Picture 1: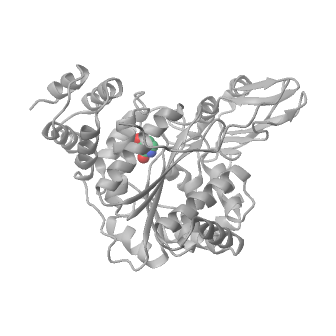
Picture 2: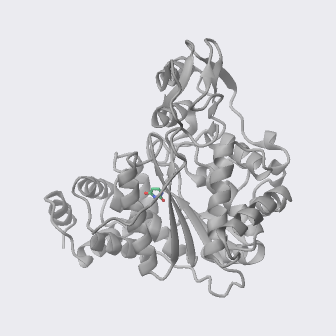
Picture 3: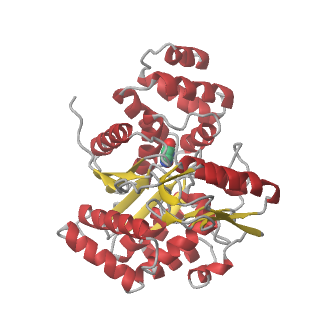
Length: 437
Ligand code: URA
């Protein structure tokens, strides 16, 4: 078999066999297939797609490149949560400790920033000293000991995802339903949790803006999970504006810490409590979602969720004191306000553009392997529906790249639409219906 033939076959819209997919994925991981061929294949898949059977085979081939984790020895029910990613989406940092405080064993394998969206691992690594490259043994031992671990794929766990994810990020091949489904589900299957809560994002700040595409992705991931014996709940949630106020790694950790104290922005708290309640319900920790919601609220109000987060940070080598002193997180040198150019209601935000501005300020990667400036980012001071007067603050830009500030300010203003009349706010939750075959 030749890699180029597999690329050509997909380029021409033909269906790949299980053997071809496995050969390709394995070759990428062994280094026998170079990055440029892997990137070309991702682009062929982006344009031609994979059907459900090929997507399942890709998922399984990716899982097979590394170890899988067996969590069956744990006494607590195992839960994992994953989002398809969106601008300002720091929900995992809030949901995972809440679920752990409710008695779940949260074994979560996360990703890095993709495209204009941030990644949980990059956010967590803004905490001084924190490691996300846990070995499978460390991962299981930590979940067993404190009920919570958030790790990245490594050379041992789903290495195929690490390689393909980084290539997709810089080759315009992120927004592909089969590639997203396989990337997420390979990590979920390898990480071993029995119960999965999947949060598929739609809207301008999501990888797939169109809710119909989000629905297809949600249904596909649920089918893959169910076929692998997992209990899966899917949500379709809004990203027509960034989630919460903070966009950028340390800024988002700070906001997540506020949410764990019950003081976070209402959209973030609502989403986090809903997902935590669902995870607890799936895992059988509560009898109803309503009870789950009450217990999740109690885990926040009592401080037990925050305490779980501290324990996780310390277990992964990080500075636990950031929980009480978020000022220990990295900060950018310059903070600049962007002001409203005129009066009006804020009716639309190009959340993807806001994500790209945050990248320009240093919060994301332009090329594979680029370092991240953990202190850089944006804090939104106005959200959709706000009534603004000229000169009112719209956002704070945080950066060490002083030369970028002026352009970033212009781009930020251009990313917003002000109107005479308010518009209804887009829904935070949309239903995920099973599509007719
Ligand atoms: N999250 C992932 O883990 N993978 C993707 O491809 C997209 C979001």
